[in-house]
Image 1 (cartoon, rainbow, N blue to C red):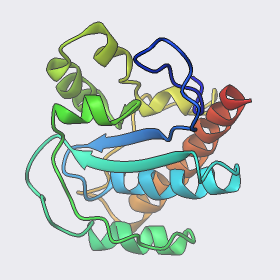
Image 2: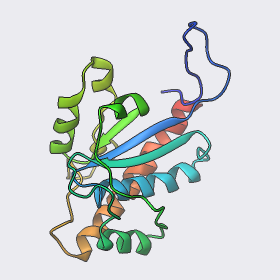
Image 3: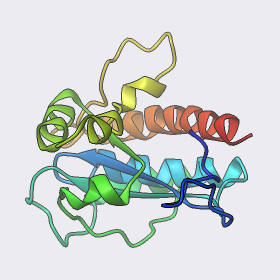
Length: 177
């Protein structure tokens, strides 16, 4: 996955570096995907990739379109040292397959919802579950939804996503070099 070189319509490498775009997806776009977006932004900056990699987030459902993230998630992000970037909820769209290079669902249901909308093998190949970047010793296979839990659950999700997105940023940095 080369974040700098893209092949133009003429079959030749394009001369200007391109931005590699990552989309994090959860159900409502007010908890997990927002946390992943924020953690990934910090990981990308720490890896020196801020000029070459961008992130966004969305939900598979329209429940919270236009809404700020859940206040409990904003508090958990602040406790972890992340500053709210002003994100407002939005719903996944088929156009996202064209706009993003990598689409990262947070759980199995999100993955299935996105794959069901993929129209080509190329679109399907862009969809990689967040768990692909979990540590090897992590017992989870998806990011748990903290929405119906307590403060501790939000903090645990932020911690898990911080670790996973650092791994993701490292993978992108290695692919770039």
